[in-house]
Image (cartoon, rainbow, N blue to C red):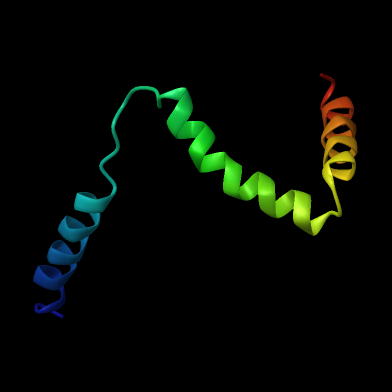
Length: 65
């Protein structure tokens, strides 16, 4: 039991290195570049732009926007 504590400390120290986040906002072009591949996949998966727009508008109505 005494040997588990040092290993757990090393594990938690390693995890904190990768969870550091910057505070601030992304540039709009970077955000657009991140979203475009997902948008293209959704257009392909749902059969066209009209279907994606219809789904998005129905979700917007459901959320009250």
